[in-house]
Amino acid sequence: MPEEMRQVISYECCPGYEKLSGEKGCPAALPLVNIYNTLGVVGAATTKMYSERAQLREEIEGPGSFTFFAPSNQAWAALPTEILDALVSNVNIELLNALHYHMVNHRLTSEDLKHGSAFPSMYQDFNVHIHHYPNGIVTVNCARLVKTDQHATNGIVHVVDRVITAVTNNVHTFIDTDDDLETLRTAVAAAGLTQMLESDGHYTVFAPTNEAFEKIPPEMLKRILGDPVALRDLLNYHILKNMQCAESITSGTPLETLQGTVLEVGCDGSDMTLNGKAIIQKKDQLGTNGVVHYINELLIPDSAKTLLELAQGSVITTATKLFVDAGLGSHLSGSEALTILTPQNEAFKEGVTMTGELKKLLKNHILKEQLSSGVLYHRQELETLGGIKLRVLVYRNSLCIENSCIAAHDKTGRFGSMFTVDKVLTPPMGTIMDVLKSDDRFSLLVGAIQTAGLTELMNQAGPHTVFAPTNDAFSALPKADLNKLMGNPQELASVLKYHMAKEILVSGGVGSHTRLKPLQGDKLELNMRNQTVYINKVPVVEADLMATNGVVHAVGAIIKPLSPKVDREQADDPIRTASSMITDSRIGVKNDDLFQKVRKSISSRTMTRIQ
Image (cartoon, rainbow, N blue to C red; front, side):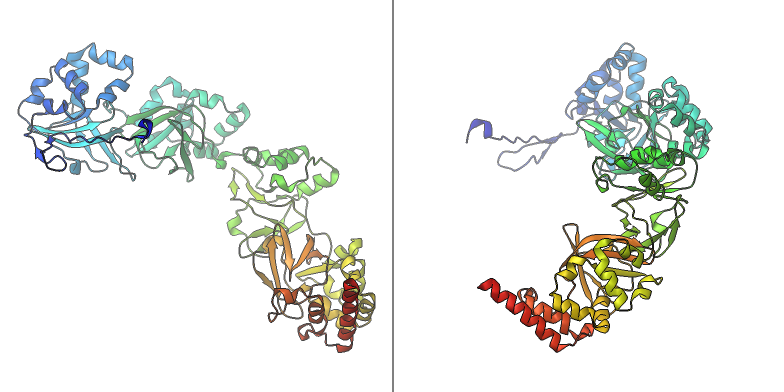
């Protein structure tokens, strides 16, 4: 094996144990020594050195029963130079006091270090605070226990990963006394949160510095500071319900705030991130009722934002710009209770420009009340700023408003809500007959409906779903057969009713296997493939032509029943499918003579192709 590929794994005995020749592991237990000497063998030699310089050696070599939370060698090396210099320049007072704060005047094993417990230290009885976390980490004043239960003749040593400092003030005192938190101090007082941050608890405060507040647009900051509800939500979004030292926070862990939503924690190299940003400046400022982490960017929850701010802070860029260009920004930045339907960027054609029609359409994307998608129900009607009514359509796996289906979780702002939808809304314009008559592609279908006596049905309240054959679909039939069908209103009505259902189904409600009961005949089989809806294998050429009494989907062929008795090859056979269309009793067409003519015509055309 090449030298660079070779791995060497070495093992060492735990402190207080040695190897025995011929034995596995380190079975030989050494005699216990006092705490002073134990420090030298558990990775805390620097603590041992400073103990001697502070004249603590005699105490921790002598009689007694102590617990020493000993900083590791790395912990002392990581201590800021100015703090270390202050300690070692006054070893008899500052350094001795600091070391005494790491000691408790009785033996505490790791089993005694319960979550939430506090023990008086040997420095003026100031408490050291113990916390356990779900990831298995245990901290002492936010310092992580890295090596526990190192027994000594006169006590026990637990090695920690940092030098800990005395906790004397609550978290509000940090805010009240640090000039770098002056704006936060003013905001906390205005929101009435002072008493809470002074009371008993285990809070975590991500404290925005003055710099963080200065990064916010002045008009937005002024609005929030002047709105007690938004301000309280803003500040509560920076406060966790429980204490989280930096050591305990694991990447990917959602942290629930007092505001009710969560902060997402991650990593950027060695830096911890909040909501994807490395904004933590100073960590683990421990108070008697929690911990403070300083951040240099304000965290603004959706609940403190206007609708326009919600939209501008999302990935929905095209619709947001169009709402502003349409002159609707004042509605979205005010205090009206509204809900906006914001289509995804890909719902718009590239290079879309503002027109009078588009302004009118966008106004109908704004609903005249603040809603949550969770309270919407089927066939509910919603009024828009444009003055029209939109229908709510509830399906097994989708929730739609007309043709537009909700594509993401709601965003709930201070006064309004934002629903991201997958399509630009198509408001209903007239009845189904109105929709068909206004589109030249359906002129033959309109005539067929009138001939079959179905005009009144297509104008009734519904709801209806119509799979509308285009002129091309009718023209694809042999001319003689088409004339024959058009000359028999009863048979024609049966065929057309197989294209109609008495419910409303938009394309967003179609899944991989969806069934629909037509007005006459057996079920229709629908599915969605590559963003196209298929009905009995016939593709929809244009979906979701919305009407006041239903929806129209244009199809390029006459829809035929699928027989369960034939396999895929048989179902695709032109003679067999024609037979299904004309003779299947499920749609009431039983004209054998017509069937024979169609069969003869198709056979003749097939033979011609062969020749």
